[in-house]
Structure formats: C-alpha cells, structure tokens
Length: 400
Image: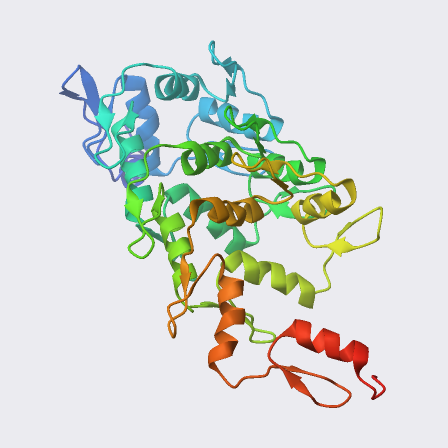
C-alpha cells in the first residue's frame, strides 16, 4: 500500500470520527426488556425505535414536509405529520367512531375515554383518570397554577400546548386562513373550530339541557359548571360554590369595586377581560354582524343571535318556579333571586341589600350629594337618569 493511499485512509477515519462525536447508542435492557438511550436515559420497547430516537441527538433530520418544511428523523413521523395538512384520520375508535392520525393516538383515546380502569384519582373532586399525566394536568384546574411562561412577553399558561400555540403569534406563523374573515391560525384544527363561528355549527350538545357548543371542551366545561354536583371551591362572602378556581375568582370581583382591565384608548375600566375586548371593537368601528330586520350592527355573532330574540320574541330560559321565561340566562339567574330571597349586594352605608349590582349602585347615590345626570340645555342636575329623561320632555329651554 502506497503512502498516499495510507494517508487518504487516515483522513477518512478522522473525518468519520469527527462526525460521530457522540458514542453509538448502547443497548441497556431496563425493566420489561426495554432499550434505553445512554445519553438521555429514555427507554423504548424496540431497538429500531431507539435507533430512530438516536438521530435526535445527532440532529439528523432527513425527511421534510413539502407543505410547511418541518423536518423529521424518520419517514413514518413525516407521514403522520402530513395527515395534519390533508385531514386524513385513518385510525378510528370502534366505540365513538372518532378518527386519529396515528394508531398510538387512537389507543390513547380509547384508554382515556372508554376504559373502565381509571386508577389515578383527584383528591379534590374525586375524578379518576387512566394516566398519571392526565391527573397532573387536571390538578392545575383546582390550583390555578400557570407553570408555562413565554420567554418573549412573559405571559403564563396552564398547559404546554397553549404556550406552544401562543408562540406562533410572536413568529407571525399563521399558515391556515379563514375564507370568511381572513383570520390566520397556526394549526388546521384551530381553523376548523373557528369556522363554526361563521357557520353556527354546534356539534357538541349537553345531554342535560341540550345546549350546543363549538368544542367538546366547552361542552364539558359547561356540564361541570352548570350540572356538576362537585363544587369544592366556595366564596367566603356569599357562600356560593364553584367547580373551577377561575370561576370563583371571576365571581369574587362582583363583591368588590375592582376593575382591573383598562382600555388604552379612552382609559375606561372593566371588571372582565371579555368586556374590555368587546369595548375595543367600538373604537375600531368593527361591527361585522348586521341584523337583517333593523340594520343594527354588532361585534360578535353571539351578540347578533341574542339580539334576534328581540324580533322573534324567543325566550328560551324558563324559571322552574313560576314558568316565566327570559331571553338571557343572566336575567333568569337574577330573577331566581326573587324566589330564593337571595340579595347578595349590600350597601356599606345603611346595610340595605339588593338583588343586583346595578340597583345597589343606583341606591348609593342617596347617601351622596352627587347629581351625575345634567341637562344639556339648562344645566339642571339629577341623581338618576330617569329623572333627567322626564325633565328633558318638560324643559322649556330648547335642547341642542
């Protein structure tokens, strides 16, 4: 062998050694005849799976998606990923007929939803789970913990998936767009759910009150909030109980004057984040939903649906005591206090009690010299708006 050939072989060996700085994966037989990676100690049932996993340490992404350019270590994971783009769900649950991208996902679904064996039980509400990680995720509902933090804007989230979806917003990565309003989404499933806002589809129906919801999660949350018997969290002021900590926190605001959400345009404050969001639409003059009967424009399709009851006379919420019906559930809840005698709003001056916050606010003017309602024509001031309206109809000065 010539010196040149020998030198070439040595160079090839040096280059090969450099590209393989990590040691080859050692087969370690853990409990249950598993194969364990000696770098991260993760275990696998098959040696071939360990070899596929090993590529993650060597950063060998050989297979790329032709839709979004995401890369994968093996062809099977690429094929599974591409089903997110095509909508293909070849693995179907034999009980509820729901489809899944992979056989593993279908098996996990069956164990979670249909198996009777649920060994992991929540100590707070007694709910049981098939997997320990499902129990751990569930416990966050009771604690209110938000352990996942965005490293860009410092927002925190209850679940890792929610954080992952949030980060798409910083990257402006919205490959899926709504054909109706142009809104973009990071994943196909989010677009599918959003489209139901436009179509009015509510495929998930409560088996108690038959109310429909856009997502299965919303229907489940509704059932636990409205029909669930387990309500471990109790308000210290009025003793009302709740299934979720966030519902208790939202309720506690009704007992205080706190309005933590502020409009950055006009500085008006609100108790609830949703109220602030609705308010901001008014600054943008964003009213995409219009009533065909009277021409009134509204920000949300849900608002239009409620408004239409003014024209149709529909009153779907019925009192189970006196059979009186109402257009909104909030009005029914307020009405029920007439029968129960509940008057949760108390005047801190005279201790008089009231059914709702608005009536208390109107009453409290009695204890002050405040006259907030002023006639534009003659500058006469009044304590209540009804007094001002009556005055305007009689005022002799010409109104602008």
